[in-house]
Amino acid sequence: MPIPCPPEAGIAPTRRRLVCMALGLAAAGGLAGCSQEVGPAPRAIKLKRESCDYCGMPIGDPRYAAEIWNADIGRVRVYDDFGCAVIAASQRKELEWTEIAFWVADEGDPARWLPARSARYRAGVATPMGHGYAAGAKAGHPADFATASAAICEKALCAHPT
Image 1 (cartoon, one colour):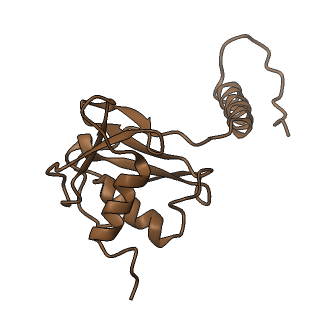
Image 2 (cartoon, helix red, strand yellow):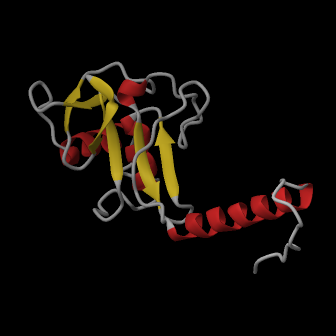
C-alpha cells in the first residue's frame, strides 16, 4: 500500500519526499525479491569460518568439501570431507535419494562443483577426516559414487548399525 506523500510546492528534495521515495523503492525491491525462488545449487564455502554440518570441524581445505541440498531450510548443508557427507546422508536415509542434490568439490579445481552421484572418486587420499576419497576428473578417479560411498559406510560401520 503506497504511503501518500503530500505534493510539495517546489521540486527541491525535501526530507518528506526523500523518505517517501526510499519507502517506495524498498517496497518495490521487497516485492521483486519475493518472486525469486532459491533452488538447489552449490555455493562457495567460507573457509575456516564455516564448520562441517556432520563433524563440526572448521572447513579448511576446499578440495574435499561436499554439499547436500536441504529443502526444509532452503540452503545447502556443508561438509569438510566427502565421507562426512556420505555418513550424514546415510544416517538421514537420504544416500540413495537421487532427487536430493549432492555435490562434491573437484580436487583438481576446488572452485568447481561436481554432481556427487555422477562424479568419479579415487581412494587413498589424506582427507580432513580420514575417509580417504576425493572426487575429480575421470582419469585417475576409477571409483563411482556407489563404490566410494559403500566403502565409506563400511569403514564407518554405517552399513551395520548397532
